[in-house]
Each structure stands twice: as C-alpha cells, then as structure tokens.
Length: 264
Image (cartoon, rainbow, N blue to C red; front, side, top):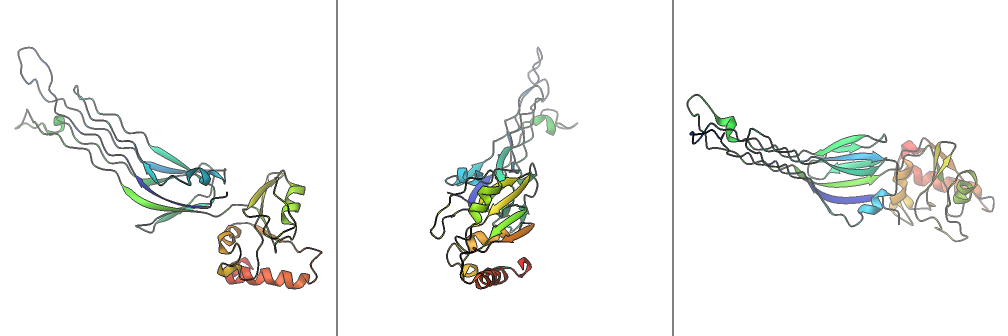
C-alpha cells in the first residue's frame, strides 16, 4: 500500500548531567574540582532519499526519540554527546511542525533539515570554581531536548505526470516506455497508487485515474491531485475507445482547475 502521509511525535535527546569530582592528590582531601560537563543530547534530523515508498515503513511508527547525552566524569572529562537521530523521508516530502506551523520541503536527495535540537549538557563543578570558592560542590543537570508533533505529506517529484480518466491507458504507456511494472486491468481504478518509471533518467509518474468531482474528494479524489503539483509537465491521455474524447479531456481540465488553477 502506498503511504503518502504520516504523523508522529518526536523528542530530541536530553543533555547529560554535569558531575562533582575532585583531583586526587596525596595528603589533600580535595585537590580541586575537575568534574566534567554532560554531553549534548542527540538532535533529530530529516534527510531526503529517493525511495518514494519509504513512508510505508513508518506506518505504525508513532514516536521517535533522540539519544540522551552522557554524564561528565572526573579528570575534567566531558560526557559523550548523544547520537543524532536521522529520519529518512522521500524526496518531495513537506514536513510541518503541528505546534508552530513551520514547514520545510525536501527538494534534493541528501538534503538534511534539523527538526528538533538536543538539550545542552549540564555543567560540572569545575565550571563553578572561582577565586573565592575554590571547592565548589555544585553541578547542574542536563536539559531536556526539544519536542513536537509532525505531519509529513508527500508530493511526488516527477518530470512528467500522466493524467486522464480511469482506463485511459496511462499504466500501459508507462510500462511500454519505462522499466515500470504497473498493474493493468479493464476495470476502473486498476491503479490505486501512483506508479513511477524511469525513461532514460527522466522520472514519469502514472497518477491514478481522475473522475468528475475528484477535486471535491470523489473517487480517489484529492489524495492524488497533490502529486500533480510538482511535475514539470503533464501528459493528458485520452483513450481512442472513448466515444467523446473532447468531453473526457474537458472533464479532467475542469478538475485540475478546480483544485489549482496554476495547473492549467
């Protein structure tokens, strides 16, 4: 099943705690503070990948958590930072922070975007040494990482989008000119999910058949209309078996205009 929308909660890692430690010197009880700081909590990033089907792996993944930083140690040693968490998302994803409304679009493979920042580590007692207080017993806790709810919507990136009524021959054409293996049938809505094919390095998308009222949610509806928005070119297929090809052409044009006039 093709998944083009997911929602999840995410929380970046907590910073490690600073510690109270002392230099060990013979005959000196407290040879001076040397407690290290805690490590930074792991941040959470989104990275764009080519695989448009990767969202299906996250169908049941409702929560992501970053790795916590490690606490400091004696000898002025700082704790290790928590490992950053990388979430792979398909090219064309629009990631929206539900709380803030901020969004970012993944438009190049390898593009990396920070979603949530890990919490800073706490300070060890070495940080609190002064000329007045040479034996500080204070250390601070690491702080929690950022958190938020996110929505990811996929808008396919393709150079050519094949559109038309059901059974217009879109899947047959895609199979004929690319290495795709799209399902073909004589009944409506054989194609339930977008199919992609590679034609000499150019990506072609077979968009499931549109019908009158698609812009209002009828049939497969608005779910797949958004995938048309980012295609560089639309190829409108009309079956030669259609008794009124001009009517079929105008039907689809009408739905495109109702959804987004810039598509006309």
